[in-house]
Length: 363
Image (cartoon, rainbow, N blue to C red):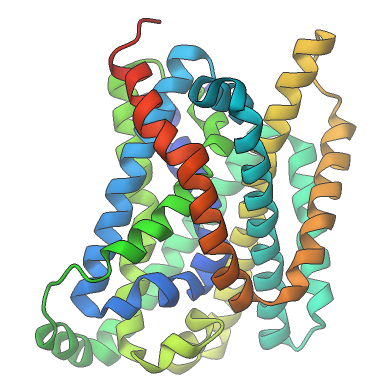
């Protein structure tokens, strides 16, 4: 267990949640141009704030339930929220996980194909191998690799911000000055937030170091802000290419080609590919934690490491079949299905039963 307060309460939950949330279509910018940036300069900012608040509330409730009831895998969490109906959430979550991994696979293939003119299968194949290897290495390796990936991302953002400020600051000031604060994008932002926050039970292993309610709150707020800082940043720089950027399949790649040099585009593609890998790793580790809990309960010992790799390989293989649909169609088609499923099986139970368990029920 991590000993320092910063590491166990702030760093690990924030890094794991950002890695899972950011790596696939958020890192490519596709989700933003579907659900955030269409609201315009200030409307998009309101949308990101909406996402941040939604994440903070859901993370706090999940972290506190996990702490109080030792519910660090989604099977135990869903039993606490749904009772005997818990398998329904597992079905919806597994479908959502497959779709998220399919989006990650598609994004990785598209990135390597567009930038390096490689067959898309190479990108998806490399993703599969790296995810399986990382999950096989275990939780400690995963947390360390995620920290490195996020540090690289923040360094890249600093450079991009410098370039945008130097070349497009007047355009951004003009765009925000001509725009008004409005709440027209809140409904789509909530849809976006609720689909993504429903994956929180898959990353509860990152909250094992949290010991008190105040630490649950601190960890939740930190993770929510940390995960959505890239949304603020990407939305602002996307305004430099608005509205043309809304039709791009890989918006961040399209914009970087216009404002930075070729060598930096190569670096960002490598960083983004690494974060896409971390998305797959973070989601699959949650699935492994659930299977490990089941195996421990039945057999009195943890699941063998080789099983981790085999389970990961099977799940990633299924997601690769879905990835043939295409990035835009996956995002547009999956969100409404997952939104309805997660509202019924997770969001409403979390806000009602979960809130009762946190604020009313005794341990």
